[in-house]
Length: 112
Length: 111
Image 1 (tube, rainbow over the protein chains, first blue to last red):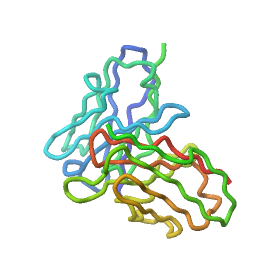
Image 2 (tube, chains in turn red, blue):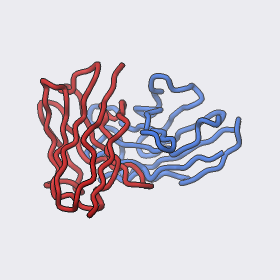
Image 3 (cartoon, rainbow over the protein chains, first blue to last red):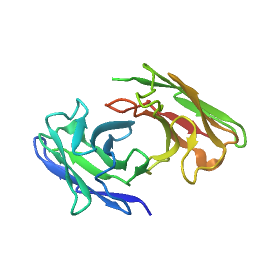
Image 4 (cartoon, each protein chain N blue to C red):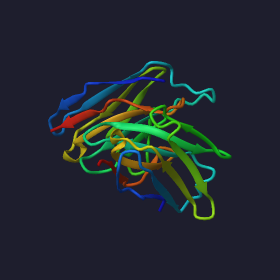
């Protein structure tokens, strides 16, 4: 069964860093559009980044310059390195293959 | 960025009756490859989103045929032919024709 599983969510102080991972099962991440979407508490869905093709990435303005995507083909994972975290980054972060298959999400809380 | 506008933002429906949600985009969603990348997602409380419809009118695997999508260009509609109790939650339209991908505000469906 095609599956993506997010991990790495945690409580972090403002200005801190965190790395999220998205692990794929029953498919290979490299030829797919691997997206990250987040949802702040009680809010709607916000697309934030994608890793696609031969290694191209695209970021929403809200995270550009602070978040960085990477891919580990040996582990079949896509990682989201989040730096300079702010309270408004608090959200459930979802990984999605092609915006069709979604994980259950991992919670990131940015608070002192 | 393409702005996605959904109407209504909330709807109370009767079990067994039809329901529809509209989504309008600020630009055409037809990609240069000729495909219109407009999807509809459903999210129940406490659950992740799941895709119902992709490329305007294609039902995703396992989605009941009471769900249907239509539209073209900038105007799209999701229809539920006969609402069931499990259909409560929030519905989102999503465009993936152009980065950044953008979602509608969400439509809350209540019974």
